[in-house]
Length: 486
Image: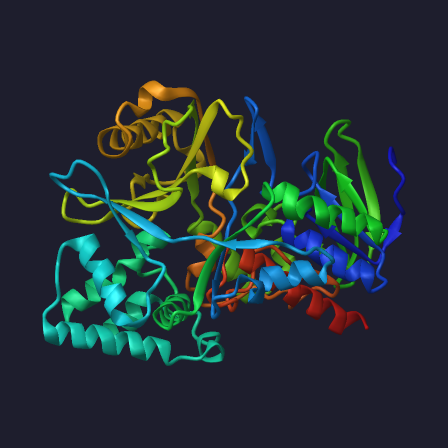
C-alpha cells in the first residue's frame, strides 16, 4: 500500500467521526490493534471545520443537550471523551425562543431555561398558540406531565416502539390538551405519529424537574476542541488512522467477519485488510445496502434500517458573513417560530456561531440559520426523496427566511450581507427521537465480529441526541466488544 499500515488488525473501525474515534481510543488502550478508516481527508466526520473568507467554523453546529442533571460534566459525551483521554471544558448556554407574531414589529423572546413544574410549559404553549387553557384543562395538563415524569429510564427503554400520538390518545382526554402536547413535534420536526413517547417523556420529565442543561465546548470549533485531541490521543496510543479511503466491502466467511476492502479516493486503488472485528461507524442510511447487505442482518435489524431510511430527511443550513455590528442586538442563539397565522411554524435555529467556537475576523459578523427539513409542518416542506430537492427551492426558502429577519429582527439585513452560502445536508438527530418497533444494537445479532457505532443505532438510548448519543453509543459499543473479546 502507499502508506505504512499492517496487513491485519484486531479491529477495523469504518468511519472516523466522533464515536469511531472514541471507540478507537478505548480499544487501542485495551491492547487491541486498531485501524480507523475515514473517507474524508481529515478525521472528524460531520465535525469538519471550514475556513471561509477568514471565518473558521464548524460546518454543522455542535452543542450538548443533557437531561437528568444540571451539570454537563455528568453527561455521557463528557464522560466518554474523558475516558478516551480528552478533557473538555463545557459552558452552559441559555435556551431561548423567539416568536414572530401578527402585527408585531419585532420578535417576542422568551427564556426556556427554567421549566420546573408544569406552569413553565403551559406558558410556553400559550406563547406558541395564543391559547390559554381553562382550569380543568390545566389540571389535566399538569397530571399528564406528572404521569410522564413518573416513568424511569429503564421503563422507557422498553417502550421505544410507542409513538407520542399513541400514548396521548390513550392517556389524554381533552382535545386542546392533546394539541398542547403535540407541539413538541414542531421543535423536533418529527411528526407526532413518528415521535417516540419514550424520548418525549424523558425530556419532559427532566425539564419539569429542573434537571437539564444545554452546553457548548469552549475553546474553538468541534474539530479543534475534541476531534483533534481524540486523533492525537489515538495516535499516541499507536492506533492507525487511514484518511481519504472509502470502505468498499466487508468480507464475511462462515458467518464471521474476515476482512474489509478499502479504496484510495485519489488513486482509486483497492486494498484488502484482514480483521476479525469490524465496527461500522457510518450512518446506517449510508452503510445500507452497499456495506451492510441483507444477508448480514436479521429481520429486526433490517426493519429498523428500512424505517430509518424511509423517514430520512435533509436540513438546510444558511451561512452569512456580514458587516461588523449587523447582528449586535440579536440574541446569540434562539429557536424561531412564525405564529402569524395562529399556527406555530418552526423556522429553525438562528445562531451567532461565535457562541459556539467560531473564529471571526474583527471586521465581520457571522450568522448561521439551521432550518429542519420537512416532516412535521415546519418552514421547509417537501415531498419525496430529499436527495432530489431542487437547490432553486432551497434558495426560495433561504430568501423567505431573509425576509423575516429583515422585517422583524434586523432591518436592512440583506444589505449587510457580504457573503452567503447554503448546505443541504443529512439530518443528524431526528432519528434519535423517533419510535422504532425494532432495534439495531451495537453488537450484530447475526454476524460474529460485526458491530455498529454510529449515532443512528440503538433506539434505547433514551433522551440522548447529538453529542450525547455519540457518547452513549461509544460506551455501549465498547462494552459489547470487550464482553465478546476478553
